[in-house]
Length: 156
Image 1 (tube, helix red, strand yellow):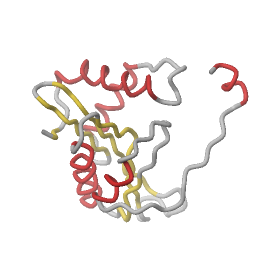
Image 2 (cartoon, helix red, strand yellow; image 1 turned 120 degrees about the vertical axis):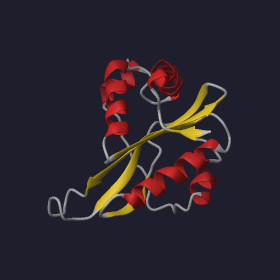
Image 3 (cartoon, helix red, strand yellow; image 1 turned 120 degrees about the horizontal axis):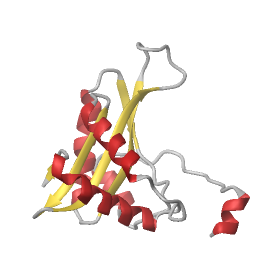
């Protein structure tokens, strides 16, 4: 079942976030989960935020956090907006596309939103992710290029 977060979900979210974080490019940095949960709660409460979890028999198996913002190059409060995910993770097949479709529906309900964007920046690639994005109606545009600070390479 895909649903909004509830008060009792916070510890389960920490466990889900921690599993995601350990697999990511950023595993060497310790997350501050009080801040993570505060931002998650904020996104759940604001009209410009969106949070959904996948729940199967009390186990959280996925999460999506999204935000809509104005493009940096538009006139404030009247220009076009975009929506994007900040965190998107699913451990169970089928949940990802359901969460993504709900996020896109939410994006279209927001005033002035003209597009929904997502990218994989965690370094966690899954071979079925492209097919899932296509099933949800997204199309690949461009790519993601990255370079790490040289001192980070020394830490790895």
